[in-house]
Structures are given as C-alpha cells and as structure tokens.
Image 1 (cartoon, rainbow, N blue to C red):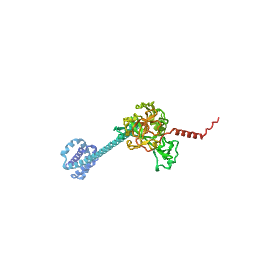
Image 2: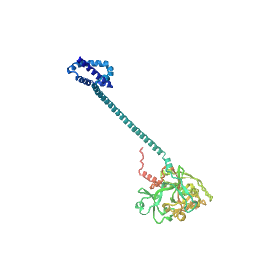
Image 3: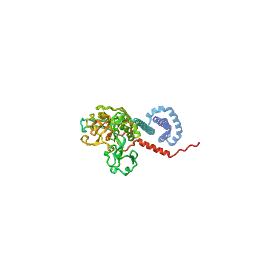
Image 4: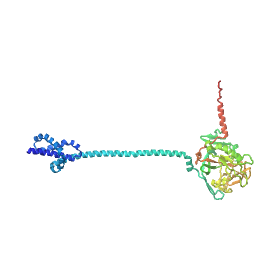
Length: 479
C-alpha cells in the first residue's frame, strides 16, 4: 500500500504540473518543447520519496495513465490546481510559468521589434513621400517659372514700356527771362552722328591716315570718324586754318517731348549740323524746302541703321500758318524726320515755356563740335546762363514766305525769323520712335553705332559689285 500511494501521488503530481503548464500557456503548441523537461522535473521530485528502481519500473505505466487522465480531467484539474498544489510543487510550477513567461516575452519582444521595424519602414516611406512631393513641387515650380519667363519674353515690349519708359517732361515756369525756369527732361539714345572733335594726343596717325570714303567717313579700331575740310562747311567762319578736322561718331542724345505709350516724340538735345533752310533764296514753305529733303534722305540714311530706320514712325506733320504775320505754312507733309514749329516750342506739355518772348532755358540749345565747325552760330551773354548757345531753325514760316521762324540763342522764339538761305542756323531734328522697338536706350553705350548708307555709298557698293561680276565673263553655251 505504501508503494501504491507513492505511485498515485507521483501520478497526481505529474497531472498537476501538466495542468499548471496548460493554465499558464497561451498557446498549446508551446508545450511541445518543454514537455520533456517537465516530465524530467516530476521524476526527479518523486525520486526523493521513492526508491529509484521502483520509479523506473513504474514510469511507462504512469506515462500512459497520465496521458489518458490528462485528456479526461484537464478542465477539472485546472480548477483544483490552486487548492491542492503543495508549496514545493508550486515552486516548480512557478519556475515553469517563469520559463513560459520568458518565452512569451521573447515572442512579445520579437513582435515589438517587428512592429518597430515596420513603423520605421513606414516612417521612412512617409519621409520619402514628402521628398517625392517636394521634388514634384519643385518640378512644377520650374515649369511654371519657365512658362512665366516665356510670357515675359512675349510681353517684353509692353513691360519695357510700362517699367522703363521715359517720363513726359515737367516744366517749372517762372514767367521770367534769364534762364530762371527749368524742365525735368527724360533722355534716350538712338542713332549716331559725328559730334565730338578729336584733337591733341587722341588724334593718332591711324585716324589721320585712314582711308576715308566719299562722305569723309572711316572706321579705325572699331570707331567711326568723319573728316571734313573748309570746303565741306556750310559757313567757314569757324573752321580755322587746318586742312582737315576730325570728329567722332557718337550716339545721338534726344529729349523726350512726349511718351504716349506707343511712340516717343523726341528732339535732339543739341544742334547736330548746320544747314540753310533752303539753299536758294526764294519764297518757300516747309514742304519744298531743301532742309526737309536733306533730313528725310541724307540725315535719315546716315544717322540710322536699317533696323533703326524701321523704328522711326512716319508722321503726318501739320504745317500751321504764322498767326502773328499771317504767313501761310503750306501743305501738311508726311515726314520721318522734321523740325519743330512755333506752336510746339511754346507748348508746356512738351516741356517748353509757353511765353514766346521769354528768354527761357527750356529752349536753350548748344551745338556739337561738328555742327559748330560746319558753321553753326554760337553766342553767350547773361541771357544764356554763360553758355555758348546757338540759334536753331523751326519749320514754321517767318514774317514773309522767304523767311523761316527760329529760336534764338537766348531761348526767345523769333516769329519773324531769318531768310531761308541763312547759312548759320543749327539743325535740331525731331522724330517719333517706336516705343517697343528696343532700339533706343536710356544710356549711352559709348559706340559709334552702325549708321546707314547714303545714296553715294550705295552707288559705290553697286559699282564695285558690277566690276567684280565683270571679272568673270559668261561663256556662251554650245549648241
């Protein structure tokens, strides 16, 4: 009976340990690995109260009975375990439970690591998505910027007109003489013409020894020069004793009289040349004057390149009568280049003093070196502010049909004028420039420009081409 009690106690112990493992195991599959260890632990504990040979003989039967009873009584023993388990057995169960918990913690840690890895991967993907979005955004911005630049290029003329266009003049009138008034002018540079004289050390042998054409022009080291003699002047009183005098072609500076958003109405800032109003003393109007012909042909053809000529907007010029002397102004004309009238040089909206008899600084005009050497008259006194000013032609008729009005050196508008064949008057051209042409500039680029070709130059070019062609006779075709 004693051994039988031991067998029964050993069987119960194994069942209790198995039940404890089932209670603590979250998944039955976990029991597969620790089963052998549990049985070994139970056998060891039983050995303390029974002989070794008896336990060895009884283990097969006990294992079979254990498996059967475990299957039948699992649920009941799960409930009874807490009441029957001895303190020593509870310790072994706690060790098994601890082992199972460690396995669970390993699974949990592994799961947490996988979760953290998954979260890191998701975070990296989330971080990469903004980068992709940012890249797409940058590409979109670049495309949008390129589109805006293309639109700006298409709209450049209007943008230039709006943002960098010259302002209209503002005249500050004092209604007093002596140059006490002033005008805020805007200026542009357009075309080119011989202006500043080259003297002293600047007059090199390369300039004096250059090959000058029929107009007296030559290019030397990228700069254009005009050479004139005393016989080339309109009036030789200011030329001096030199055989030749040399002048540098420079950009023409223009005062802006009006910017209407489409064209710039401009007048030269100085007298550019010296010419008679008409080369013959006779009754004449602007329409038939030789000065008009010269401005629209020779000057227009030499001062402006072909592109610049395309930017000059031809105007229907109204030739008003001289209301003070009742002199007829003649027919209206279509001109590319012309002179101002009495009405225009007394128009405040164009920057001029409205009083014709006022010695106004708004109408003061000086000459280029070239114009003065060619004969343009200059004079200075208290009414010129100490400047050597010139008088300049207007297109309006004077007191008679054989005279033309002018602006005197002191800014006085002489409605009576000079005889049309006077050889001392300065020429101050006026014209309209296409605002969107981009061929005018707010600053001087310091070059001689391109200039055009005069009729004489064109004829010389054609003649040279004909001679070149004649060097190669055409052979007759054989029949």
